[in-house]
Length: 547
Image (cartoon, rainbow, N blue to C red; front, side):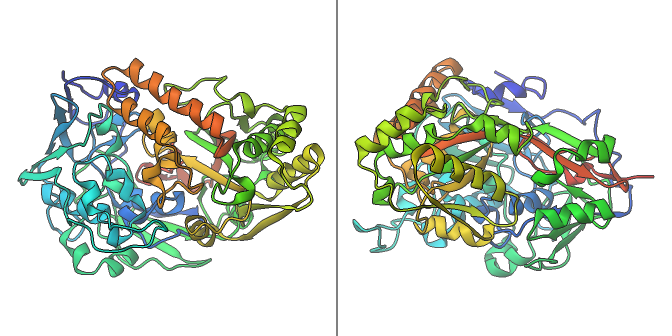
């Protein structure tokens, strides 16, 4: 089978059997090319880590890296796969062994070639556990991954070195071709390869990874000619890469990513004209922003989910009945109406509505049911005399709605709460990874690639512990169903298996799905053609300078 851009949207739903995904010509709706000038600025929060594709698993760093790198495939604004990236084709006869053929002529910003070795070396580095890359688990379905993981004892302490340092499932055929052997069939695998973890790396990275993380050398439409400066008021300015090989070069001459600790401050600066684009609005601005900004107000459907996650490693929250009770004590619609003014939709599934496989009635314990919640809490023997810590990252506009959640837990379950919203995202993420959460915590996920599995595996599979599975939930039955779904022969069979896996999550409730977001942003009069895609990322290359 052969797939062009017209049919590439089908890939996002998963395709069975032999697959051949091929590139097409230029984009009729593309930008004006690399002839523009001028600079503009974008608000971001503080990235958690240095800017490394293998170690960036949060939105702020991903936004910057998306301007600096281009992967094998790209996703359009509606999260459909487009062959405007480095890959000419990705093909397989059995959905297990994939042949990746690259377009010729791609280079990194330092002039070195983007070739098969640059992908294979990058993936091996990220997968090798001693390198401690957060995105390592994205390669867990490639043959040989387990041999790259250091052995541990029953307490999780490392007891030795990995058996191997390179994935046996990766093989360079020639400069423009490499093979990927998966440990099991996965018909949707090509769809995943546009995500940050799969970006290539130049030889310069391996000479000094630390320096690279401060000033990355990518192959994207913008390049870094200065290091990233951390902290409020810091950030990085990227300049247009005039030798960019992609179909959509940057329109503007440069983009400044400016770090803020408070979204309210960024919004004030937008109103004053000193920052040009913000991708999310503070809650206090939701009622007035559309009237204030007019056609510069942006509202887009978001492929995300916000949840109240539980530290399953904490004895107080180890019983699924406790977690189900908390979920049923929350009136999602009331919070959406009163605080989010309708810009959040109550979640009824662990899967986003933008993805094929979503069910409106998947989560029966996501509906308000105070009587049943109290019954379950009593049945589990939960101690209501001790307050509950509610964790969330500071400065991002979460205070009001997390307080509303706390008020509902107090009113409906007779449990007092303490708001723990004093740490920024860059500090709270390591605490999550180190089992530092002492109570339920705000968790949010933006899809990496548009499949049901992406809302399940990276958040709740055993393989994702140490990555984005901050609840430390592990269930072999759930893991097995995910693997069966990945190996399914048809899209319908895959979705049925993913939904069975989701049913287990509803039973175990490691997280309580709360909201899906309708994203709202805005931009200044200085810029045009501002696109916020279904991943919540601003297409910096598409932005033009007004006038």
